[in-house]
Image (tube, rainbow, N blue to C red; front, top):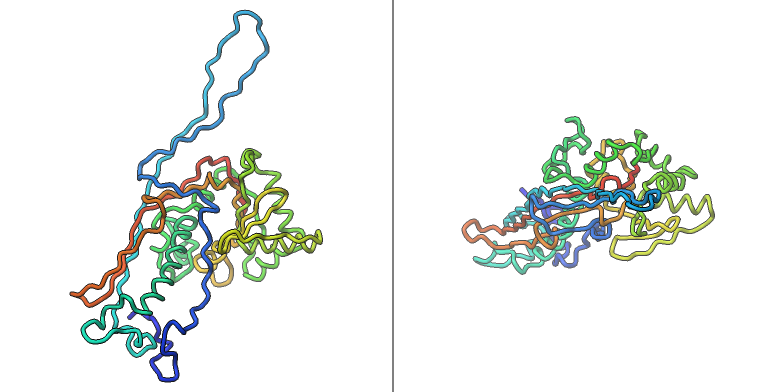
Length: 352
C-alpha cells in the first residue's frame, strides 16, 4: 500500500485541512540551463563538431608560391535518446483514516481526487521530483549502474531503474578523464573513507584555493577562450572555497542568487556556479553508509559544451492526469526521451 499521510491520522485534534499542514521544505530547483545546454533533437541525429583549421603561413618564396590545401578538424557524434516514463496510480482508500480523508468527495465521486487539496499538494511535490529526475538523468544517469553490493557505486537499496534510463554527463566526463589524465585534477578528500574525514580534508586551510588554482593553471586555455566557461562545483566544495578565502586571505567571496537555488560567484575572473543538487544526489544515490562517492566535483567547461538532448522543447513533459472510472483510481502518466553529450572532449577539465 502506498503511504501518503499515515503518520497524520484522522483525529479531531489534528488539522482539518491539508493546506494547513507544514510541508517539509524541499531542495529548491536549480535551473538546469545554467550549467548545460538543452537541445531538441531526434535519436540518431548527428552533431557536427568543427575543430581548428590547420596552421597557415610559411616563409616567403617570392614568385610562383606553393598553394596548400589545408584541413579543418571535424567529427560527428550522434544522439541516442533513451525513453523514460512516470506511471502513477492513486486509490482513495489509501487516504482513509488519515488527515487526507477530509479532502475526499462524497457519494459516487469519492474515488475521484481531481480538484481536491490532496491532489494539489501531490502534484506540487511531484513537480519537485520531476525536476530532480531530470537532474538525475542529465548528470548521474548510467545504463550500467549497479549497487555497491553488486560492484557499483549506487547506494544499496536504491531502485536501480532510477539511474539506468540513460548515460549522464558524469559518466561521459569520467570516461574522458580516464582516457586523458591531463584533464583531471585529483581531489584528495574524495579518497577518505568517512564523511568526517572527507569534510575535514576539503576544509583544511589552503586546500580548496590550491585545488581551484591548479585547475585553472592546468586546464586547456581554450576552455575559457571566449570568457563564457564556468567552474561548476557542488555546494560542499563551493562552501569550502569561500571559507578558505575568508580564512586564508581575509576576504569574502560574494554569492549572487540568480535563480532559485542557483548561486554564482567568481574566482580569478572565472564564473563559479554552486550546485547543491549534486550534493543531494551523491548523498542519496552514491552513499556507502560511511562515506560518499566523489562528494567533491568540479567541471570546468563552457555550458554550451555540456549538452542534454530531448525529444521536446523541454526535458520535463506535460502530465496526463485522469480518473479511471473502471478501476476507480486516479492515474498520472508522463514520458519522454533524453540523452547527454560532451561536444568537444578536450574542452573540459575535471576535478574529482
